Length: 302
Image 1 (cartoon, rainbow, N blue to C red):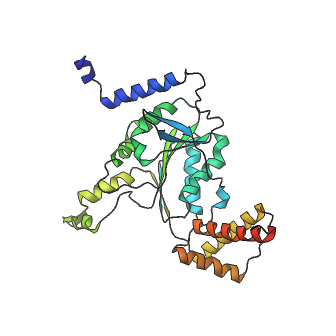
Image 2: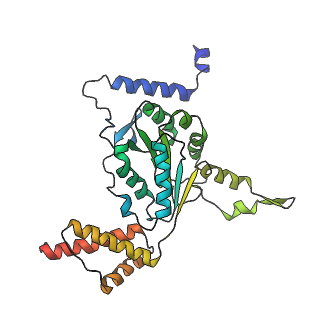
Image 3: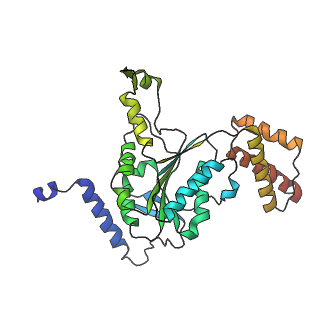
């Protein structure tokens, strides 16, 4: 018996046991498995014994047309996603850059646009990245295409969990599971903190610059994403364009007509200044404030 278990890795054994548990659960009367034909997105939830995919309670209802001033990023990610849906070669994608510039919204908009084409979303938190093999195994026979979405992903210097993602991106998991692709968002280009001390260890050999081992290790993770898309803070005119777009959208939903004015322009700029960032999120928040205030004024609600 000892010799038998010595030939099986603990990770393999646990994976097989988890798969057996899931199969047994399906035999229990009243147990509800996910129906992917009507479920657009799910999140991996860890319970006391195992983890499972649970229908996502709330996905942003956002359209690709709502995402302004990120046209190049939008075109690139849409093209990559269409390749994936067609069963053609496609890349795992890293969307990195300034906060509130539409990285997560772009992924959610893809789901809204291509749900009828078979696209589905699996949201996985950083702490659950080690379970990617189990997730891939459970979805391997499904006739849909799944984006494994890691939102706001980053690792601290002493966090070794990134190695699980690193091996998954280039390992056998996603070569065998052709219906899975990883899309991740981050404020960090290389997902790991970068320090000046790392660069001080670089050296010149024969006139060539050789990066330190610390730098090489950090870059090696993000390098495993075949598609990099960069997002930058919006210029003032772009921010104002976003404000006007969201005011028009929200006002239309509330049967209002709000005329753009110098006063509204100045107020929206003060709103962004108070938050220290001109972003799509800031523009949308101001639009909600503005339209909500007008609804109260119109309806006389206290």
